[in-house]
Length: 209
Image 1 (cartoon, rainbow, N blue to C red):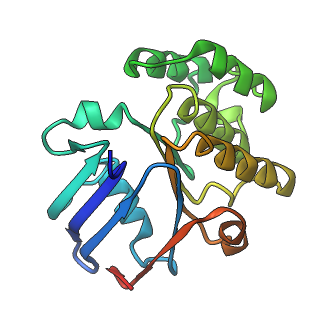
Image 2: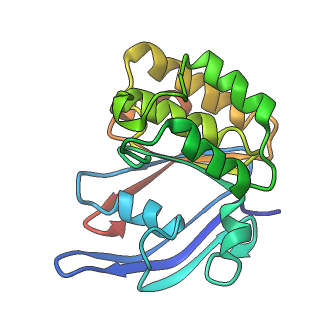
């Protein structure tokens, strides 16, 4: 497979902002950093790839699957971590984990339990009692536990302590070691990208620079 992620002519029109004709590719075995100022369009790009927002135009392919044609197949290959994006409320974390167990075709329970132990997470707690950092770690545990080919992270470091931030970088480096997975990471902590990123995509005012 030539590309794990192919973004071609991606645009999204809002009332006061336009993501304008963004294109890039990500091959297997690499980490790409997505950088830009607040409001530049990084999260719009990621949310469009995840189909959280409906793009105005363009094509997104994941592992060769067109997101508009084979959304379920494409999303089955994606693991994602979104800052403040996990479920909230009074339900226990394990309720949402059970939903993911049923959603992904390649769920690996042994791997999930390993990460839960490693991250010192208690999924019997309600989501509202988990700290922001714990919610990020829970998303990461889920993302790493269904053998996704593409891992997408949107500002994952912002709510993590410095010790776990370093551990996260080691985890991401390990994810791509076998050469058949890739990582797209959006972050303001550009020093992290200096350590691990193979490529940088810079977005400014809705355009790729």
